[in-house]
Image (tube, rainbow, N blue to C red):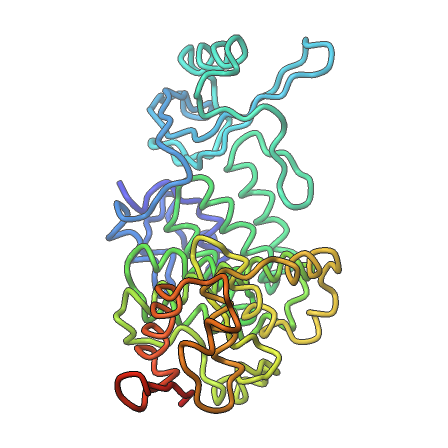
Length: 383
């Protein structure tokens, strides 16, 4: 049943209630948070990291057996081939006593492991090698990883990054309601936790809650320039994905909500981002199929961190060829007065009239340019 198989220690960490006041088998109602109930009510809409991989497992504490989604099986074999260990990514607790382990492997799991070792080319939910947490710890089960992070959180409860890592563990373990609780706690203790804002937005997008998804994506953009936990290249990639998601949300909401925060909002929040800067390319063409097209916008939110981007990466990006449509857009944005299609054809001789007409039509529809004149005297100008 949704909301069960929850660690009482998680509730303790989330709410600071004494463990003696928390049921041994809490439900999702004990998690709190703003969005958790929405996740629980619409679990079928949430995509899991991989299809269910259910196996019979026997609880080593109470002896009861049950079928559980064990997730990916990570198999590690030593160099001499004699020592073998396995890890399970699925988050599950005993349906009878709510213990997180120890577990006794079932014959079904043993056969599965042997099959994976004998035929590694088969399409099985198997990972060969160790799975490590952010600090190098290798948990046999997701519940062991949870205990590890909860101990770290107990020592530094205001560490938003640790809460984010715990949320990622739950998400990988196919428990999005627990993940959401951890992500919400993450931004509660650190409102500028960029990664958690993006994770919350990604979950809300699956519920089609575009308003709140865009809210958290705006918070991600605003806080990015001071975010210390990612190096510049990874920060740009994360921002680009978030901004792309924000544009998708705006489109799917029929532009009821703006994809980017207003300049006024940015100033009020203390952000140095300037979306009206001359440094931002005016011929920007965005495509969800090419995340690099969002890099210029991502860099606008990075502030001084832009200077730490890998030079080779920046050089490669600037050397990328513009599409034909981008070349036409670039010409139009550079114009200070009236221009005709013939002027574009003369400047871009390799581009067809059909492409030029298409770009002009799109820019006029977007309110960027306007037409004057009739017949052969039609001219265009930027508004």
